Length: 389
Image 1 (cartoon, rainbow, N blue to C red):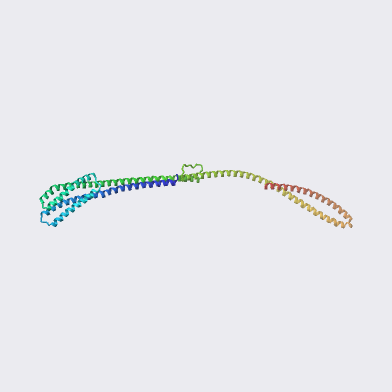
Image 2: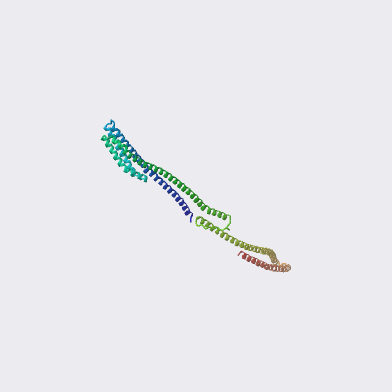
């Protein structure tokens, strides 16, 4: 698996953990919000409605006593009508608040108390209407008796039932607050656990990714330094298939190539050494040949010098012969006057000619020697040409 894929999976894991922590937090917040909404939309409305119902009922009952007092005293009809209207308004307000309360979700104890109140309420309102009718007709004592007995008993029963509802809603508010606290604590616990888990996973992932990247790179650096120092003996092996493994395999191929190149260089060096030895031997042989050639050249030079001396001697003899010939000619022209001298001169000339003949013979021998020297020079030239080839 490539390093890029592993990094992508690691970051995806961190993202999933972060997403899980976020979803867990959102779920906890939603549960807490629902609990608070239930508290505010149900329990608080119920408490407010039951309180309004109870306050309206109490105000209605007090209004009946006020109306009785107004009917006994010197109170104008207008004031009595105002009190009657207040009684009617308080009853309507109480009934309206109670209807709002009954529309909210109810617990079992609330529902039971409400069912009982539904039975008592019509009787109480009917008794109250009857009391007001008796007050209007002047039956004050009868109205007082019913107000203090039947109506008051119905009022206490209704009040107690409403208080049961109020207490139930107060209890539900406390339970909701406790549940909200529990949800808050649970949310905090889960959030902290998720954060710690995400932190641990991030640390572990970071360590694994670091080892995943740095270990093969360190191995590659170590092998590269070893190769740079000239150590090609240790094999580079890896079972990884990612980029780091490819890097190590490339180093292994490079090491193999260097080893092969160095082997070829070593073989070439051996061949070069052998060729150098052969060249040295050839050079020595050439040196010996040149030495021999030099000796022969020295011999040839000596022979040439000898030949030159012989040629000079022949030339000198030729000059002498030429002078003798000219002298003989002169003496021949003068021979007729000096015959005796001529005969003597001819005799001397014959002797000199014989000497010249001997000199020519000697010159011919020297020419033969020169031919031998020339043959030696030709042989040396042939050997020089062979060495040159």
